[in-house]
Amino acid sequence: MIRSTLLAFLIVIAITVVLTVPALAERPELYGLVLIIDPGHGGVDPGASGYFANNGSEVKVVEDEYVYDVALRLRRMAKKYGAIVIMTTRDKKQTVPYAGSQTEVIPPDKNEVFTLSGRKVHSGRNRYLSQRTDIANQALLKYPKHRVVYISIHFDSSGNSELTGVHLIGPNTGKPAIVSLLEEEFRKERRLRTLNGAEYHPFQRNGSVRNLFILKGSNNAVDQRVLIELGNFKNPADVWRIRDYRVRENYAQIVLRALIKLNGVVNLAACQ
Ligand SMILES: [Zn+2]
Image (cartoon, rainbow, N blue to C red):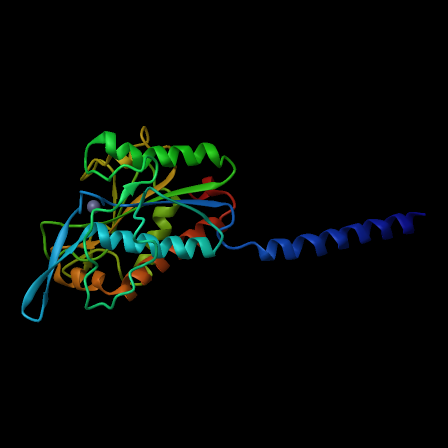
């Protein structure tokens, strides 16, 4: 009697293992993650800009088109790995990453609109910026059981032309796991911001240098929130790099790796 009960019990266990293990193994790496990508600027606001020399003439490169391209690359990758992806702005005419070579400049346009309202993207003032955070707060309500991450993508124009590389701005208190993971991944590829060869404040808290509306806890309730400055338009090497689609693809891959690591952490609170 005991034997047959034990046997039945073992069979049940075996069936459970057979049924659940493949299901778990088939889950994509970003299963259960909602990624909000906030491409900086757009519409009538091109953001910062820089120039690079091209056959003796200077060609202008604007921030919004390049960060939007990185956002599209990240969206494509994150979706492939099972994430739900929401963009805060969209450009109906630019739905896939720019296919031109690195010797071409992504042509500037004013097509970007806010995803929430469909209104043209405007700069600065809070009534426009809240379109970028309202969408994040709504995602938290819509997906209460998911892990929500908010990534704003920019390209800086710092006064010091020697500053080169990527830096991250996070909430004014604590350091979300996504910030530490991004720092780790960008450092591995030697992409973090440096000054004269030494790493230079790759992470800053909101409010320490700039006070950004979109990162304030009262405006954006997503814990895992970060703004990435991919480079400095004043630095010729950074401008040269961002033109290259392979570099933009690489930036998106680095962010993807950080997201995959984040999603692999079962208890997020434990690593904060
Ligand atoms: Zn910007």
